[in-house]
Length: 223
Ligand SMILES: C[S@@+](CC[C@H](N)C(=O)[O-])C[C@H]1O[C@@H](n2cnc3c(N)ncnc32)[C@H](O)[C@@H]1O
Image 1 (cartoon, rainbow, N blue to C red):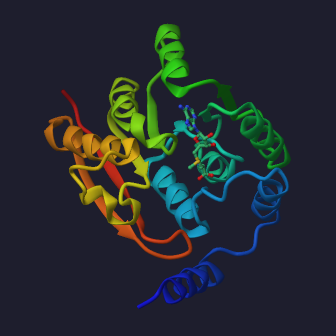
Image 2 (cartoon, rainbow, N blue to C red):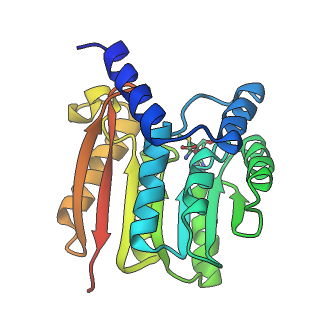
């Protein structure tokens, strides 16, 4: 099996199940034009996020890691009427591209993008006494995933979902001795998932247009 085969299957799924969407196509074009790195979710992953938010009936979504707004738009489209999505992004350039894309998608009223290191913007949200979120999507600097999980626990309620992207990292997640901070952050994230009694969690490997990676999904329980 090869990356070409995995990618071809992704492309088949997308051709069958994800009709061409001028808004999302324009987002991807804008990211290329702005020379943003090609590290956003794939179309079938974006639709998975959309489905999770729809299944949850999410009225409030927190995203950590905006890039050009591709996953932001998938998630915001799934919001219940009157819902809100807050997305956190360290790069002012990425945030500007995302804002333009969110506006073009007609979602500016539902989406707010906060610029700054997520550790800081999360602290700001906590200080402001933000209302709980129904879904948190963690997709920024992986070394801080443990910090983001603790914040997600603080900002959610029973029934909320916490999704974390890129948890496989081409299999490097297995390397307990890795000096890569992103691998260490991912491994610590799994330790926290395993020991956290308020979470029911699993993780799934994915292959396809984004290579060999995966995501974890956690349901927040009471307590
Ligand atoms: C993988 S990309 C997000 C992709 C996006 N969720 C999507 O699928 O379209 C990660 C983003 O996180 C941002 N980022 C990295 N470190 C960050 C930090 N400390 N705080 C907030 N954002 C950060 C990067 O600038 C980048 O735009």
